[in-house]
Image 1 (cartoon, rainbow, N blue to C red):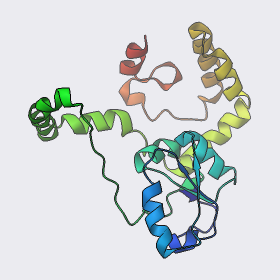
Image 2: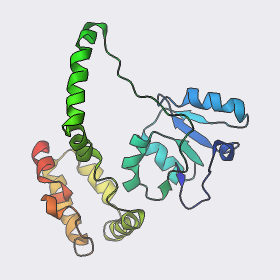
Image 3: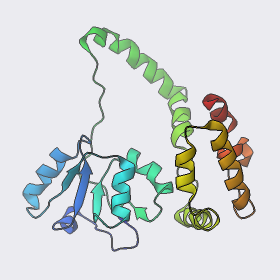
Length: 208
């Protein structure tokens, strides 16, 4: 992941000598260590941080690029539209489940359940529920929305953070904030019954 406004690296060779970072525990360190044998000038900082913070560090120019899982980057698209995927690493990272010995005998049963969920569309529906919205807007839509937000409510981030322990106040803040931008922004989720602060009915009910 790098800034879209700059010339994007196209290979690991382009990252040699650049300020590169990754999240501790993401599993990328062994992969980079192997790549370093081929590219001795390759170096990186291993940070104990979140995907959002490391994305902000790249957007702010602290790092030239970061190595991040696609699943962690996708939600950042709508937060930092100025960031983009430069290229995929040459090695694929396997995702595994680690089961305690006490429940390993359930493996066959669990696998049958997962296989059924894959065949009947359940996994696809779960993915759509949590990740389906992430690519509905392109970078120009997100930048336009952010521009309106900054103009109408430049301190909205501070306001929302200060209100997050008071549900009534948070709801009032959202109502007042949205009323200022509703005339300029179209809700793409209207057909899903989106309510105050862009919550769908299902999410609003689940949050109480």
